[in-house]
Length: 265
Image 1 (tube, rainbow, N blue to C red):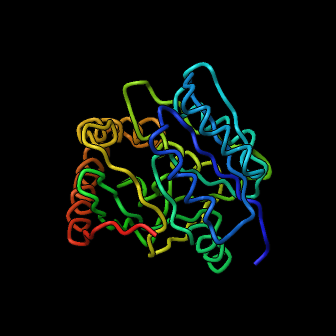
Image 2 (tube, rainbow, N blue to C red; image 1 turned 90 degrees about the horizontal axis):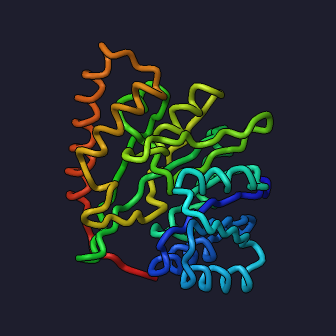
């Protein structure tokens, strides 16, 4: 396996309580050829002090501070634009990568001749320190993605297109899951071969009351993205939404069958 540079994009907004843990997971990666782009979104002196200290101690960290609150999509797109790596990965500032994440996915990409890699993951619930193991789909194509978003952002790594930078679409402010719009757009713009790792590589924080945990908002956003970025005609939309609801329910049920206490190393 060659030694490609992996650019990791991490937008930071009101993340002063979680950022150290998230960055720790990256610092402890067994694969070492990476750069971390920390994009601080909006004025936050405490957060800026934390990330400035991290950047001073670790030369692989690049710090970008926006005094204006631009939102997560624009912050990620700034990272995409400035990334120097052959591969592009994303990690939210409240998620955590397991130490083998990059090494496992790069090896899998080479074995499968893939240009996009994702994996199983664990939902982490801080109120009870429990983890739900979540498997998405072992086979991921554009057609399967129309039924459910099987590529969680913090588990994904995509090879950079040498001919063109691809950016995350800006959704209306009241909607979520811009990552889903990104993947659907990417599938339509370039040939994508996905490799899926069965082993969990990340812990994704789940907080009660968060926008991402709002099932109605998630469904509404999913329908909008299918119609706008998936090229789905109205007469097919209802059937795909039924499939989406089924897959979402199945994912949660299976996750609860594989719930275990959190063990930190």
